[in-house]
Length: 264
Ligand code: DGL
Image 1: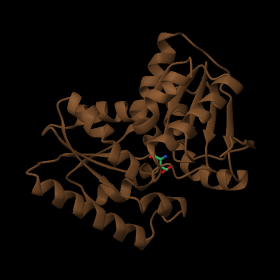
Image 2: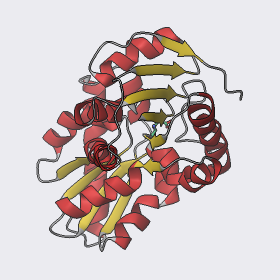
Image 3: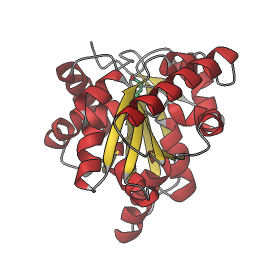
């Protein structure tokens, strides 16, 4: 089975990392739309246009038979547009993240940190509400550039995290919430997971990569699908930068990245 994995950049490689552990036998085609990143500060119409052209590339040109939208922003704002544009099953990370939050939270109050666009869409609130959870969402727009810069353990990143997370808890407290769970609603944030967990040890930290991978693995198992364990990587901007940064996100060396032009 050929699985297309799509993100605006390299963050979705955290999801591919989990997929490779759960279902290593499948064939994977990863596309990072690095030329048009960040999606998180753009309008819904633009995000949908970029995400649909990326999905077309993976399905029509590369033959993906199943699509994983390993980008929270695209999952939050463009999932329906993508589903309408391709003829293969599509799985986004917001639904799987909300499922994981439901399983983790005892108090029923959940915090979400994400990009501006994801927070403004309230996709997490809607998905969590359907599962009986109350949610407070906060945009943390400085985190993606800090992670992209490789400043994972940098003191500036520690301070930015401390400020965002203490504001988040104060704001939720002012709404009489008793959160026990924090959803990392952006595929860049799992790289900061240890630092985040250290700052908020009272919260269960959820990243949707593992739950998404579990769901894909069970689909593969149900369909009795197999593959040759191949991996192909595409990026829409500098392949050198993708390879260098992607190695950090995937946790293993990335060879053979191909440059692709999807237009503006
Ligand atoms: N991949 C995006 C997400 O998960 C973050 C990067 C961007 O803004 O494009 O929300």
